Length: 117
Length: 111
Image 1 (cartoon, rainbow over the protein chains, first blue to last red):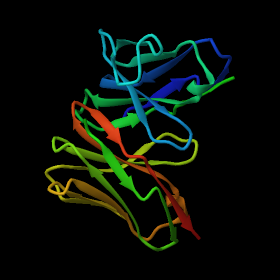
Image 2: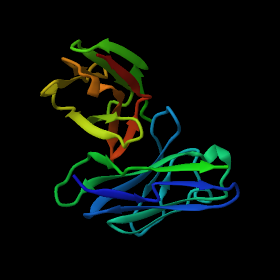
Image 3: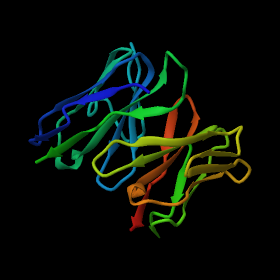
Image 4: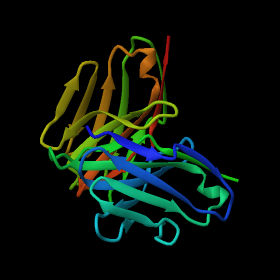
């Protein structure tokens, strides 16, 4: 499986500010996704990060709040904009479709724990 | 769209007993069903998966069964150990890599 890293691992931010989370994979992957996991809850898909084009957002998530970049097949960023305490959560990136060996399994990064005061 | 329901939400078993977690899905187009284990403070880790052309798959103490007709699949853990304590998520993939997760089952294995 691919080795996935995320930065930062955690952060404490003030409301009204923005935070950009980075996701780096050690091999080229077809698909990259961003999830949110609130305490004690399941995984909610925010968006699919598309290489070279705009991300595909799920219902309830918008580009102005969660802009996403994916400049190449190994890297993506998620920005949480104009943060409020309700944005406090764990944000996880996941990857699928490792190009070297086609698969539809998703593998998760270690997550970024965000606290908004 | 796809909807995945998972039961029970909490499961407590004695060490050595078996644990069973059940999931149902709604979209008959779903063809891939992974199971993830998430320990406290860690990322979800894939533990086993099954595709729609297979009815059962086993890996040591873990097995998964799939009933396509009834649209349900189950995770079976035998000879449970304290290190099996975690949250388990089932998921269904209706195609195109998009994965829909169940609500999770918190498993406690009592020594």
